[in-house]
Length: 282
Image 1 (cartoon, rainbow, N blue to C red):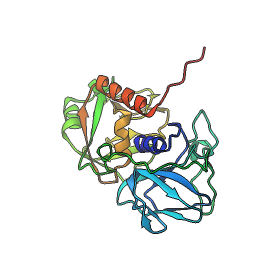
Image 2: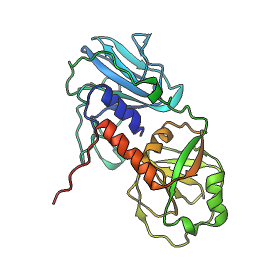
Image 3: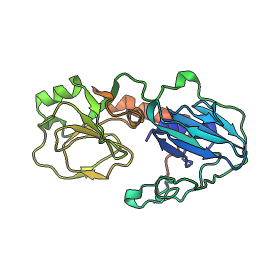
Image 4: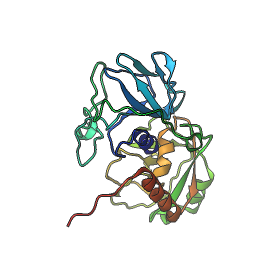
């Protein structure tokens, strides 16, 4: 959900940017080490401890056999990320190790972890010196007073009323309690206009759609592939990282944006983290 935190966790361990890692929602997690190793922890502040001593975050953590890493319930943010040297061993579907139980995609186990289950990773004995993400590059998860989402308006935007189009950029919403990995639902002003006749059309990460209750939702990483409700447009994938860390009740605003600057930011991110796109096959 928070790709920035995930990518940093793998970078701290010199992993491939697509190496499988753990996403821990709201904390409440413990891991006992059977070997000496180094892991990387990023994302939400879960007051991590190693054998009861503060372990820190956005850094590597060296553990010995028998030691226990605990993540308390997060004080800020929603999701923490734990990466392992070489990446976790996991089945892949369509090139991804992500598990989606709803769609039958296996990933690590095809479901959340259960107590007592073992984890294995690519290069378990690899040891690193201490590493950390520089403080000026870390924005504490969920720390923004009001999250501003850049909105690139789409082809259905002109079919919303002038009043609703103005409302999109002047009103404030809050993250709704029904939000999940599929979409973040926003509570607040109703947007009751929009196209009267609709065909289902493709969705991408960040598509902003107005559903039957006249409130916008922002599609996230487990989105469906098509949707049939009116669409305001889309926000860029980088903005979704902060949205993934926003708790229910967090305030959200939209700001008008064009694709040029957002595309440049994405290219810079992919270059920094060493992400390469697959070569099209004939």
